Image (cartoon, rainbow, N blue to C red; front, side):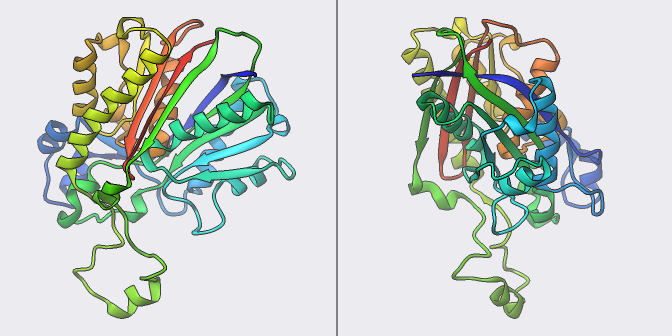
Length: 336
């Protein structure tokens, strides 16, 4: 059985910066309120006409990752695309990336696990490589959530959190028995599916019905989050799934070189850091600059940490995420 490793990372963020002060002009909120509750100071939003979509941003991040991996797009055997904001209802966004990168008939699949999407995608890539079915896999997390957010005071709890962006990783077969992805740990709990959800449009409430009803109080086509319940479950599941990875690989929290948690809320990251007794230099956060980019948050942070020289050969890197579903997971990597 083969092992897999990450050999290239990339990211893309739209140029348009939306600060907390910008949001103060649109909704009933304040810079102080947002920072106290989320740690976010600004986020990126695409702009109409700038050419950015979930797929095109994913392709831009992928091109950077391929360049850093010193690999051509035609060497990719599979594209795994994690998103909750695809360009189209169907087909998935992965096929658009395949077309942009000009990889003839390369299979592409989308993963719809929201904030946990990249962790699930990386675990899936690892399994395909372990079995020998594929050698080089592109894993992408990309989101354009700004167009589906209720930018009024009614939707402020969501509006202040989410941002747009993309990150990508090139995963390939490892020649080392000790370096690469050591393990992945994935979970879901559908009992709480309605606590972090975007209900419409769906097959029981299609666009025509929403338009004909013309109900100003209908918020079913905007994201909904039970914030307190999500926070409570997130901190518990983060701890559990990180411990699963540590225990399976017989390592301790002291061995963690860098923990990259999903950038959901700075308070969640700080809670997890304290729980494991990690120093500031053992945890990477960039939610202050980009907000919550759901499936893109971990690959963006991973790429940025690598760019800043915070990841070196032999380092133990732990990725952990929690999101809609509920779904949560972790990947433990010995870099190199």
